[in-house]
Image (tube, rainbow, N blue to C red; front, side, top):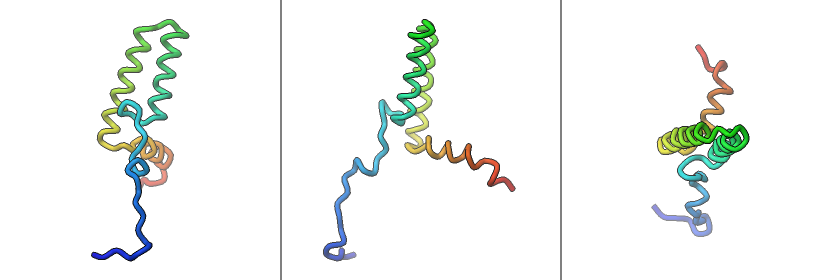
Length: 86
């Protein structure tokens, strides 16, 4: 297979990979950490905040290993759930 001159551009790998924070999607990891910090600091429930953070982050990491784009797919599934029934 030959390439046509001028119609080829290199793409850096970081443009195609999702942005993960500790193995979980960045946005969800920030939301999870913020809620856990609010529970730990604001409500002074330290152990519950740590458990919430660890459990949420672990679940997101497992889901991101299977599909790095699980968050937009899940949001789309929730939004279109009733439209695709038989």
